[in-house]
Image 1 (cartoon, rainbow, N blue to C red):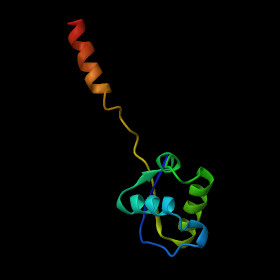
Image 2: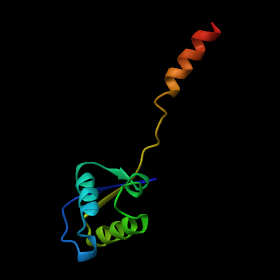
Image 3: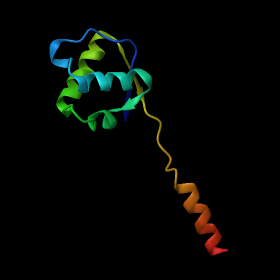
Image 4: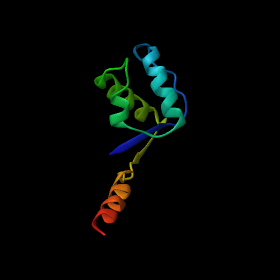
Length: 87
């Protein structure tokens, strides 16, 4: 899965000047966000998010990286709990 971060604030075309896009860009300027996270944002349709990502990539202001696999944060706790139960 890919993650995206905004490298610099672009001059946006009119169709991307709504508040939902500004919130999205503000979050992307602070940290890497997965596409799944971006698609869940209120006020912006998934097709609009994808169009924005394409525009930002074309303008060269988007850093794209492969997300590191997530280890379930509960998995170690559950494993320890199960170990204690069986001993």
